[in-house]
Amino acid sequence: MGIIYLVAKVVDAVADPIVGYLTDHTVSRFGRRRPWLLFGAVPFGLAFLFAMGGAAANRVGQVWVLFGGCAASGCGVQLD
Image (tube, rainbow, N blue to C red):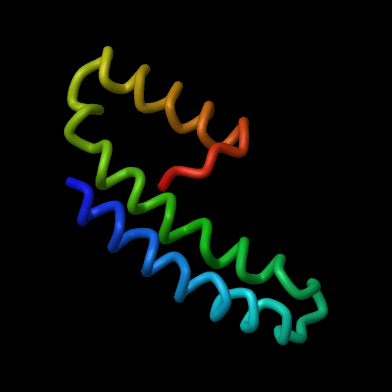
């Protein structure tokens, strides 16, 4: 289990500077980071839907998925 966390942290350590560089050098009429947020919302929304699709098969699962999604996005929780 520890190797999974290690790999996740190494990937994060490599990806963060790359994404930071890309967002810092983005030129758009909407700003530097807003296009990344807008275009990233759709894939992350679909990933959340597919990941929680099994739990949403019944009413109790739907309530928990809705609550978890609102809590994670509303509170600014980083899920990693």
